[in-house]
Length: 393
Image 1: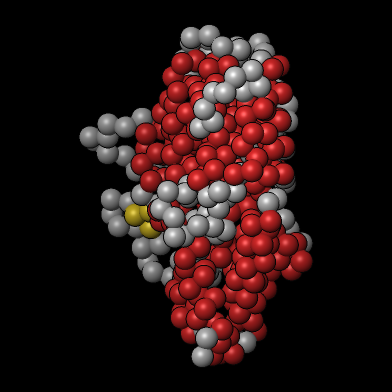
Image 2 (image 1 turned 180 degrees about the vertical axis):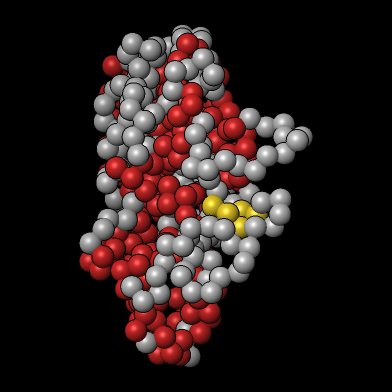
């Protein structure tokens, strides 16, 4: 119901408040600062390079010739919009949901979840660690993305604990019809798999659910646009509207989920849907997997994605022991990678760099981890273009 969660919102009355706004180190102070802690986080995210690159990363459909198919950055905008509607109605902190939603997918690799799967395969093979975008997102904002302070020094993003927690806790692959925040302010290094812990704030719980609402609705809309669901629309209508011929579109799907969630959530039960709507969500998820995500057209494209990413990875991995040999294969790729390394490695760095050093040039595991970070940050376009530079004479 309206304002049903206002008593547990992230504000100064919340007993978790000091943890919610805690940063690893204090931000620089301005005499004329007008933003809240979460407002500062939001602007730090949208000014990052990783955020900008999401406009050229696949959400579900690799469709570079179609300007109307959802990209990763559009998905982020949709999640922010849905989060705002829910949080505003329930009385939660909309600035916090905005910051979390805007940053939640900042760790995604090129080519969507398929790209993530192939990077994880390489990571597990060579360094024994799983790659997953929620964890990579946290490491992106903690270690990789750099911003200049007022004095021109490069520093890590240094976001609040609640936004960092929202990033690594946002996994939308939830099967339970109840999401409530955890009480413990744990070290986020304790995460070893997606969805391991509940988020720390109600606002992060909202983003977690909004992520699922967003992708279920928009993926159907895009699949219809691309003709993937032409022969399945009658079955889809039977799932969504068994008693009428209501139009199937993003507006109706998303609105129904939001309305139901807002009218069934409370501090005792958590964020939850009615049993009927939760059952519908699960049916819709199964339909999407069978008819969209596992469709022949999408499965065919995964071979192409794997070829691109493994080819780039192999060249960069070769550069650890044979730098000149790798350079002969693709000088542009090596030059770009080595320029990127300068900001993070234990060699000579610019005096203005005040960020953490986490890459050790003579340690192969550290070097491979750097390669995975670098590839994960690529756009679809950059990865594709670099692949053709590698194979062309």
